Length: 124
Image (tube, rainbow, N blue to C red; front, side):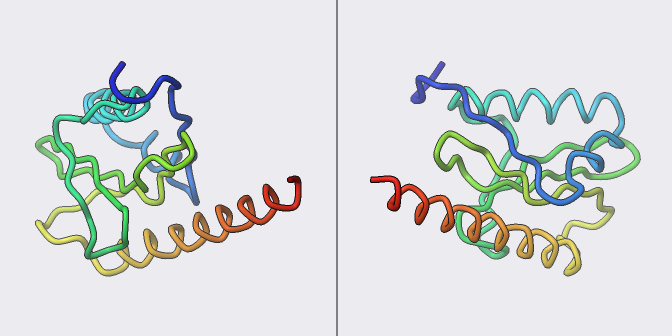
């Protein structure tokens, strides 16, 4: 294990888990391993920051003969990796609709985190 003593949880927002479960087996295996690396605090082989979509967002990438597969996630926050979008694409650019879905779910994550912070303050 790398920098984190505890293994991070993975939280799936929207229909991301269902989308990933529909990816081809080889892609699921590769992306699943990359997620495990993130949980262990390690850097996956194929990821990149997505600041153009949202602050703190990254994408895991894989491809096969049929297309390109992406998982967009918020960097580890309170030992949780928030998966805000997953999709398949056939062009180099991220389609606008996919950006909007990721941004919408990112707003939901931020709202949740804000509530948790307020709740933690009330408990003190």
